[in-house]
Each structure stands twice: as structure tokens, then as C-alpha cells.
Image (cartoon, rainbow, N blue to C red; front, top):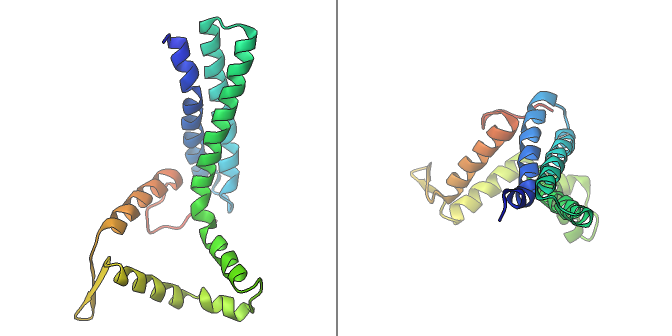
Length: 179
């Protein structure tokens, strides 16, 4: 495999790396209420990096114009798919509670009184439900009226997500992003 071919196949991944890096930088610089502005704006520099890498690789390979068009289309599609995946990975944390509320409405036949929905999602109820789930799963143990850590699987997962949040948003686990 020639170096031009290697760079050609790496171009969408290089674009994705640029997308992620620009997203992190823009999130820290913009500090807007909506997390989507940085996410959408960062797609463009990633696209530019992918196209520049693709074109440089095709030039090094001295590819025919038909091959150039096909590879550019392939890399655009691949970068688009990778970018779509990254967008939804980030969006998953943002939208999960909203999706859950909509599912509750659907399960209730499409309509619920506001008081019933607020009862399902009030702070005390959410905390109580989470503690019960952790306790039933063995992740949280209760002895002598005190909570203790049981299984550490969720704790390890939480630390990974704290690290990712810190990397992307530049905040420590106890901080809240600027809104």
C-alpha cells in the first residue's frame, strides 16, 4: 500500500479527529446556552481537514479524475457517517431525559396531567429511585444506616464519563456547563 493510499483511507478518521478537537475548543470558547452551536460549527473544520487530506493523497497517487471523484464521494460519505455518530454520541447525554419524558407520555396514552409528570420527575423521586436501583443491583450497600460502595462497575463508568466531560467541556465533575 502506498503512502498516498494510506492517507486516502485515513482521511475520514483525520477529519473526525479534527471535528472532535474543534468541538472541544469551540465549546470552551463559545460558552453558549445551547451545546449544539459548537457541535455543528466544529463539523466544518473536520470536513476541511478530511477534504484536504483526501485531495493531497489523490494527488500523490496521481489518480484519474474518475477515481478522484469516486474517492472524494466515498470519503465525504464516510466522514459524514463518522460525524453523525459523534454528534449523536454527544447528544445522547443531552437528550436522554427529554426522551424518557416523551416515552412516559406515550406509555400513558399520549397525555398526562402536568402534576402527574412533575410527580414522576421531581428531585426527591428521582433520587429515591436511583438509590433503590443502585441498592437492588448491589452497587450501593446499606449497613447501620450508612451507604457504602458495593460493585464498582458504575463507579468506573462514571469516572470515564467525568474524564470525557472534563475533556470536552473543560469542567470538573462538580461544575455545571455555562448555559
